[in-house]
Image: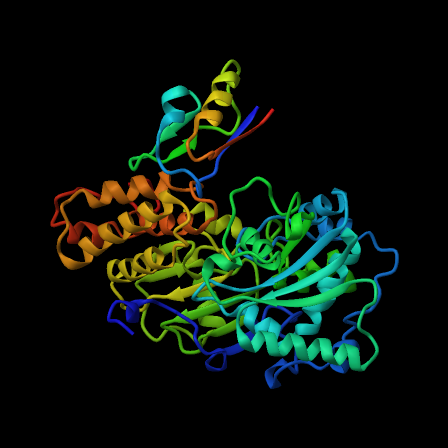
Length: 63
Length: 431
């Protein structure tokens, strides 16, 4: 699975890093980035939940 | 113009103010005789073989053999991009990107106003190679629009306007971010000339959602030249990793600021002394890539002008614009450029708004004697951590500026922090 954070949408809610700290990190202003676009094995379901719960719908993934 | 913006180095406002020419080590391919008098006519171009059919040449293979790399700033192998669009399902679109938003670059403007037919020939070649029925010339500067329209009129008057590829001109207001490839696709599709998040990339979904090849106009001109003269001839100039010749915009403290065709390989210093008339003042350093490669210290003048050598010292050749700083204070210059970044951000990405503002504030504090001592560490952290974080490469440019000021001019930074931070080290090494 690959994951992307759309930085034009991210408003820094931080819910993704809360759900899935192995995939998403927040910078010093609270904006999210994928640590790597390749999702580590086992984290796929958490990424789906993070994408679904992002208030700005800023997370996209490709299975 | 404010006091701050007057410190902006190498900004090109008037193309007419610039010289042009070629490095004596090459036989010019783009800055050919006759261009000193202005735009080459259709007749003059046809005498050079421009628009001559390429027959059954395998164009993508020829570009691969030539090793042509994109001249818009990213230096991506052209044949990979062309092959990706050709492999995608049609209909397809090709965009000749001549927007040229880098403030210190004028080479695309020079090319479009002197060799518009060579660009159009490259656009047609690309469209026919990837199977596109539409080609768009994407422009911002008024003089380029006039020149391209005049060239298209000449083709029509000669009965040579192509029937298999529809060519139109799309004009936007000049802005750095407007030249980014997803911004070009958005603008041509009827939206704002603003970058979009990737993926999808233009070769997957570009103009009107179609697979789109977005190519810098100079890349297209070289492609046309390669298919006329061959990959081997192309490789007679340049280095093995950066073959061929390239257009550079040399500015700042030199006698003949201008647009020059040079081979890849000579040093930064050689370019200034050989084609730009030499320095007016021994340079304190250089601004690279039309500002997107950050700064280089004076002693880096020996670095070879090829994509990989410049990247290896932590900078970037980008669009080939290099500004000699003369006796300017690099901290003052960096602060002025950082101010420009914070103003010119498209303000789409939160990280770009905050990142460019933070870099501006830190460099402003250094310049104005308000430094706390935390600036070198902050600039270094932003200079590495912000790379790749925005939807486009704009923030990467601000990051390069922050990073290279600290690595290339440690003494100037230390002097401004009052010795609160020990950043003595060899330029080029991590701070």
